[in-house]
Length: 394
Image (tube, rainbow, N blue to C red; front, side, top):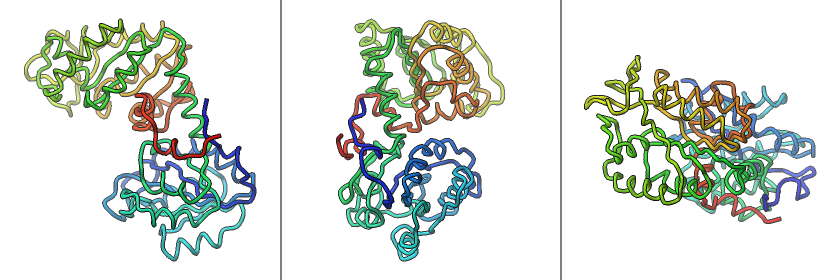
């Protein structure tokens, strides 16, 4: 159960709301929005606040800028949001200066104002208290609804709550509720699918999965590490050899817990380079010294599909192959389609996996597609999220 106060637990009528959203959306070379998934995910909270006569001051970051840039400006995001919401969304090319302050002062009930990218300002990442205080001065209430940064300690994430009553929006509540259902009391059998580049990063997640999952499919670079630890040749596949000892420990722990790790031991898709335009599928034991393993092969993917049919709960965090190259996105796409067609409770842990599902137009076929990659990873690993902890308890 979500035990933090939400917008429904506080009087928001005609209040001025500082609303932290995650509108960190991708764009083209001119910064125009190419994927509006995260904007649409924030609509329930926005609609609720507008119906109660609130004026909204929206804060968000976008990308990883070194400073102000057109590419990462929030202005195109404000234009896109205006189209989606169906009303004017104002924009101020500033955050704490005079033009931002003037724009805030001119707001009327039900007005929406988007301020400039919080990460254009070094004070955001440094957790500057004075910076957070200035942002807090814009409103009466702080509403945190940016789940994707709930694991961060930025000024606009956990600093503002020191100066304003702070509650969660509906997206935060939904994320925590749905992810909790999947990991705390899931309907058996449970299938977990995880990929990633570094075993160390996903180790807490793997260990937590071992507490309740019946099968764990390991993909990506992590699969290469585990295959190598089992004695398979992995060619030129990229992984950190320093993690081999950890890989052997993980395999031993899984066996001790009675959990089955599913690896592409039947076949794999290989190429001589990561930007290859053709895939070759071979038996896993036939990997040559100059091969890169870049995806599950057809038989290995088939094994995962069978597990999907038998599962009642499926948690997916991380694509199966080098999905950025369409040639090696085959297994990820087939798995997404198989899960979408299943009757299991299905949860996608955000990030790259959400991109796969959304690109196929399948998000509405899943029980929950998270908006947060790192945040969902930390939460499903059993870690506390600073931005959630900072909110008022019910």
